[in-house]
Structure formats: C-alpha cells, structure tokens
Length: 122
Image (cartoon, rainbow, N blue to C red; front, side):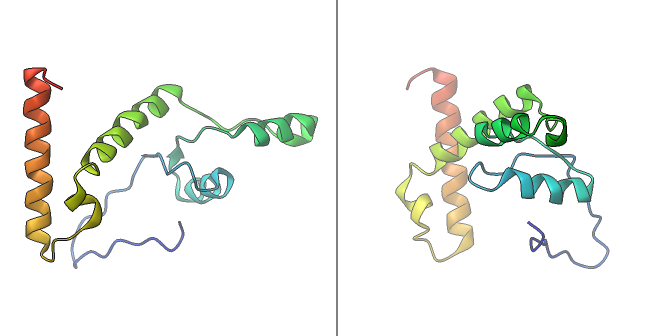
C-alpha cells in the first residue's frame, strides 16, 4: 500500500481517510502496520491462524488488534454492490474505449438497479 498515490492538481485539498476496509486477500498484518503509520484505523478481521499463533505465544504474542464488527458487516453491502455491477458483461470486461461511455453504462446500471429495488421486483 505504500506505493499507492493519488495525483492531484495544484491547490487541491487532501482529505485523509479515517477508516479503511481493504480487500481480504491482502496480508492483514502488513496493511495494519502501514495504516497505523498513517494514523488510519483498519477494519480487518484477524485470521484464525494468526489468532492461534498469538495465543500460543502467550504474553509475548501481544494484544489482539482492534476490530469493529459493525463496520466489518457494512463492508459486505459495499462488496455486494460491486459484484452486482460486475454482472453486466460490458462493465466487467471494459469493452468501451471511451471513459464517458463506460460511465454512462455504470449510471444506467445504477438507475435500473435502483428502480427495480424500489418496485420490489427481483
């Protein structure tokens, strides 16, 4: 995560994230250290093997990392939203050459999803 940067034009205000929920496939220990260095709290569940290893070490294993279960549950809703968007083949494969066409497809999909959610039809 140290190599991630967002280019900004001169004079743009920079807002810092307060809470980050990274993908589950990344190593939680390394991500936690990087986020701690930046002063950001992480919403990452501790893997079972790391929990067992920490407990096996006893008092030298350290204390468990902070974990907010409610924020972790909210992460599920965001992931389901991205997965629903990826159900459209054109959005998942990025066939469109122009960014404006791709953005239009994303907005169209969001509008269709929203109206079907309002009407209650699956």
